[in-house]
Length: 459
Image (tube, rainbow, N blue to C red; front, top):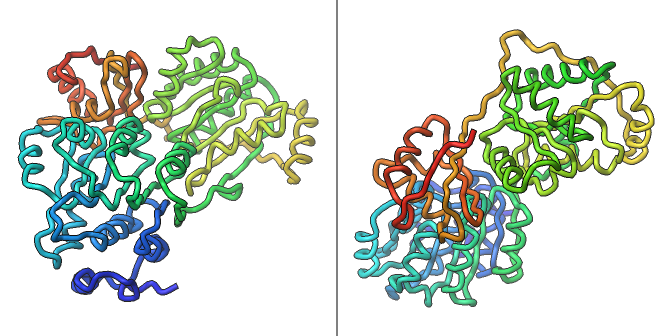
């Protein structure tokens, strides 16, 4: 594969600029995606931050541009204002040898007035967040009828933040004949569903590591009593220091006992089992998914629907009776190109389970000695906190409204905002612990969609 930018059928001005910028050799994602995108085909690009995806789609939309036609021809959707600003800056840099190109950013958290004025003067390329783009479309300030290239950048992050509805609404305003480029660090089922719905026979380009069994370090430890089992869990958590860990149990009673014991020893932990009301179950899963709790103790049934991309560790407090369930448990770690560890605690009574598991996986399992963590090691504390807002979908509150309320004038940075989960009558947003007080002050003093909502930290 030729990895030189000069080998691409790009416009002469773009090639000249790339040379002046000393952009000579393409990154893997650029080398795999650019030739396909320049043919006008839809592309799904999976790559981590820093892989060079911005330059890849930036060159494509600039190559497609008719600068003499002063209409919006390209739209890039981003999850945060900070990313949108970075993307717009990169596009402007790539376009500096093409005169009179106008790139406009439209993001929440800033006043509408200047954006309305800029839109009245027209633009070739729009970069923005889904919520604010939708607002302008609804008011008739933005016309996408001549759009030829649509880019969804960090699509997985946009879905995490709850922008699905806004993205769908924006897509309704775009021509069916457009080229669609979707970039994502991970490729969960939700991304696959979007791709099937909005893209035409997309080519998938992947440079991230594939998840496979080799990404999971599986270890078995022998214990001889209930107390030894509980002590082993604490030692493993201290030794491996996971930022995110699920402990699987076979009974509801065990989830409560283990969570209580870990909490008493200073761990950040929460349990989930079949006895929880739906509201409490939702809140528990939200807090764990958004990294404001480090450890989730769960039964298999209660953990159904749990979709965590970055799970450092799984602990099987008891082996499952079903080998297939065991494989499913440990497969929750080591995803999206990251590594993970799966620890299982067994006794002599588990011999028949081990035999069944070895037959199922065609592997042999040996036990190792439990680690003795250094006395200096302390429980890992989460870096995020969860805020609950007493306004949700029924009040027409959207993720973009929440993000804008947090990051507006004198607010916190978009990079300090984590996942946003929307429910009918409430919403949850994760923010970095270091800015919780500032975030609460901003939300308490400000308004969302012109209304005041009660906001508090969930503990």
